[in-house]
Image 1 (cartoon, rainbow, N blue to C red):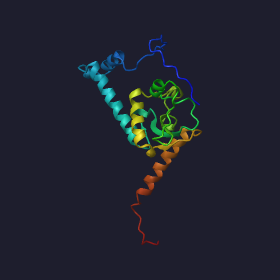
Image 2: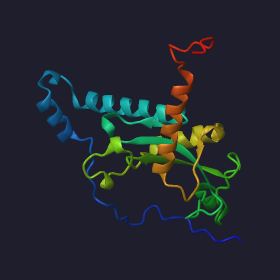
Image 3: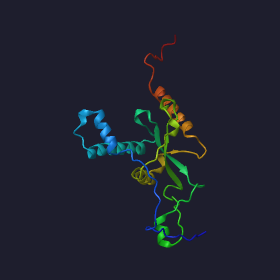
Length: 197
């Protein structure tokens, strides 16, 4: 079924939520107050250090199939594969829709109809920080674009996450699997196969 697609008016008035950026001058000033030996650090250098650290986290999350634990017990993050058979919202290809004048959906034929999702959880016992239920993770545009690019090239390596599975249950299964693998791979030091006593 082909639906007409109205090209968005780029000059129309917009409503934007006011939000506070965490990485701002106030954070830099409080960092300098807390660590006076870093007084020579400029705001631009401060931002570059944080952005470089974030890029390193992105690379680890993308490259490691089982995901990455975040520092300071903030949680656990991984890339998962989800089926796109019953999407909750339309996956519209805006470039092609504007070009042809009717709605064109992304079919994800490169990844056999699968979608990449960035999962974050802080449900495990060791991530029990104060008010953990109000924490959320919203990836920035650069992270999402990088995941999209890498996922289309190597989508088979990521964990398949069913729609009705709780992430905490999946996380606990991964940790249990890792512990069992460590126990199996490390042989006992005192084991002697010829000793029958």
